[in-house]
Image 1 (cartoon, rainbow, N blue to C red):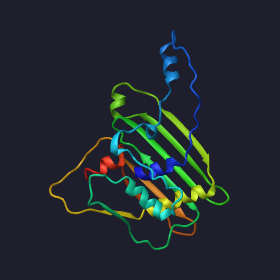
Image 2 (cartoon, rainbow, N blue to C red):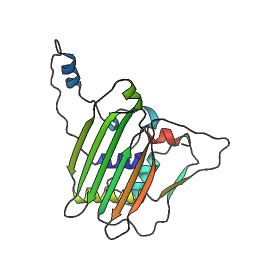
Image 3 (spheres, rainbow, N blue to C red):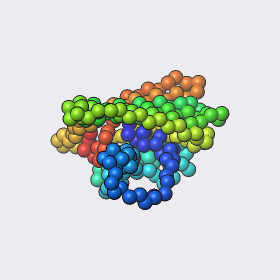
Image 4 (cartoon, helix red, strand yellow):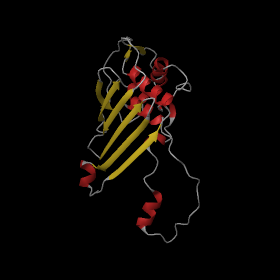
Length: 227
């Protein structure tokens, strides 16, 4: 699920503004909080080392099937040489138009953070719409945290760009992984894991719906320990 989320977020281009010096001397606590803002989004943080989620350099120029495999292979745990990925049941390729709905619901342990993403790829109208809601979870409420934040974004897309993303998602849904047998059991458990659902609807075809676990950390780091 995190790989699908990362792919959809790649088509957004958040605006940036040049830094302007401001003195904070004498500001109240609330003014300081307002100045600092919400901070960078998690996808923009500089993850360290080899476990960072990676984007292939040719993701946007490859055909969608090859791009989907390249995206998965770029994020394989580097230490595991026995892990292999392939396209399961190639069949008819994804269509040229349709929609993708991705719902990401976090664990309710510390913070309840939910994201809703809708992608439309159509020659007449292509766009990406996102909504993000966040409020204190069980632990945060026990610590006296209150409040709720909401953020909505709408990004108009060029049809070829939107179609590329939609078709890559269609191929990602068919990717399967296998590895050589291992001795013993390796598992990671996190109270931060949430749930995600993806609904793909290509024009003129039945909808494809997938549900899975949402990893809060990077893809290679969780894949490496057989999560």
